[in-house]
Length: 257
Image 1: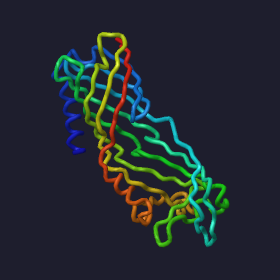
Image 2: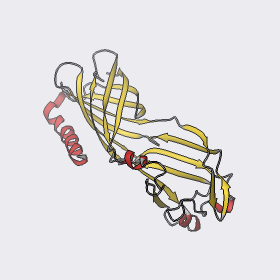
Image 3: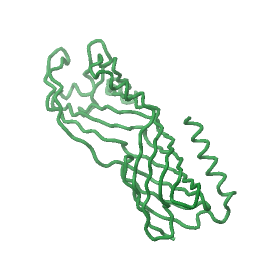
Image 4: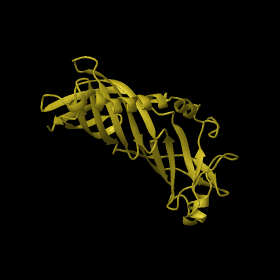
């Protein structure tokens, strides 16, 4: 499915110049958007009467911060209190570039859209500040995790990281209303669709080898319901099995020429 959508987008983009000739890119608009992909900036241009090309970048500059209590945990042979641990979580770090092709089947505002979001593949980013729980010589060296299971460490600054990883190139399909390039100076658009993510895989990191020898890579630790001894009631595996992420956004575009 991913390869098919990419091929269709490429074919539409390459075929459009031959099909529409001098009507290509004779107007352009610049707009801002707000939605589940974050705050975005987009440029748009027509490709004939029934096609429109949009390209831009979006990011979610907001994060959620809260102190969490994890209770007493055995670390390094001693039991320590992991309470009031500052955590920060966000979406789409550090953002995604996007290329979208709008297809208008008629003369009205309704359209189909296909495209591609490209980024780092980090749907969810989270970090925990353990610098006040660990001693400085334990940063990047002390293993944390369930007994007999995989262990992660902090980095050299005492921060532990958890990411929800998806495809770095995510095909998108959807529907929408409105022309980003219209006769009016200002126009409003609406998009509704899904990005094919491949399912979010949760992972943390073990910095031990990298701490001892910075030339060595950081080990990736997969986090599943099994590694958590099903204390999440299977939710990590269930959410990770969903191959798409919903997208909805509003856009406001201003005609440049």
